[in-house]
Length: 255
Image (cartoon, rainbow, N blue to C red; front, side, top):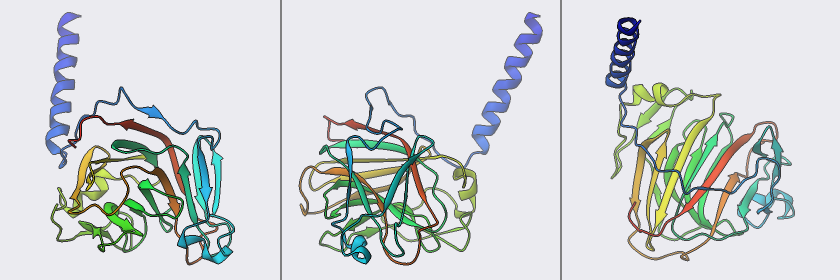
């Protein structure tokens, strides 16, 4: 029996290392012990919907999109054609790391806002999950300076991306994207912001995707964490979905 168990264990190690060798990504390990749940999976307690952004113009800034809880997730969509908005934490954060799981339809434009306010101004970790869009690049939502840094674009299908020139290059071959990202399943997105001017780092399923460091202070030191449904078009029947949202305030300012 000992020989059999030893043989099975050895085979398992061989399979594990073979799989690790075949994987074209460098996945990082994280210390998640100090993370705090900021979404209870049942209600929007601790969050509020804002209709003050430019994405809510179709309703004349009367509503901020449709946000409901389904199957333990925050589910967002436009409430009327062209009308989106944000759902944002009541609490303000400064230096922090946020992690969540996402399972969006391929079509709606969304985003993870860092240090956001009710007007929608924030450093945005992009969740532009559509043709021509990007995941986890950095966009200056309502900020000066024209910040828009991304290292890949989606093509016609969610399985196809094209690498772009960027200060932080795409850390894997574009053709390997389907090995990292599984559409229709829950995938993990993570972002860290420290300092002001801030340094921002983002990850997709444990793979570091983007590093961005601003050169000037253009936004307050603190703000909320927000999720977005973009205005324009008609996305009343397509949805964004987020769950297991956690944050860790950071004392050390080193991403």
